[in-house]
Length: 294
Image (cartoon, rainbow, N blue to C red):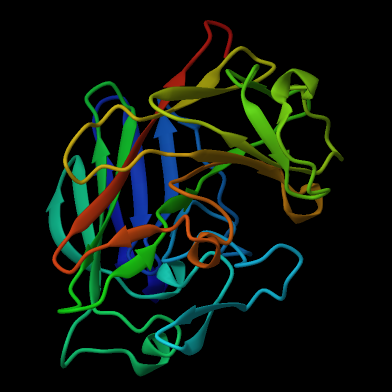
């Protein structure tokens, strides 16, 4: 067995199985009654579901992947989707249906390379909870440990699902939508054709608020639903965007990406401003429905 297997942690019950990699906090598998609900490519480790942070995407559209932002009169660079997928996470809680991982930058235990990208003390925590019915709840939380400074942050997940010709995205009609490829903004999603073809590339940001459900329907009748906004707590922030992304030359996947704020939020003033000692969190749930003929 490869040495990397030591970083894989398994959750399971009578309906579903989940595999989480502590290297990058990747979700390598979520299968319900043997049917895969997530896409993962062993040959391309980043092509699997992972947290994004402290930024979501490139900090300005059409800019180099190493985006720039300013804090305290200095300029800092963050890579595409941040650095959370590139670090080793510590397991802080593990039960048959619950895994909690943490990654922190604290005094005396600072990765100087990361500090050059994000000059704050903080603690990230991810909880993966396998529900009794096989659905999977993901909670991403950020706590600002800096004694004085407000920390700008975005919370997001790059969630990969399998793609088949004829896959359909439901529950988006009527939502405002931005085409991240052409930069067309604020057109209604009634102009968006929800059925995808094999060679079609997609990069669309749907603007949402409150509790929403996004459903992927497959030609064989099964479906995957992502629900946001279910959890209401003092720390919870709203998902404001869900990005639908598909790049056929990279693999047979389609992504539904819940994002608290959006692209370039650390520069445009829309990032979550987290006070010293404050915690903010984002939660979503994935559920699978299997057809009788699946």
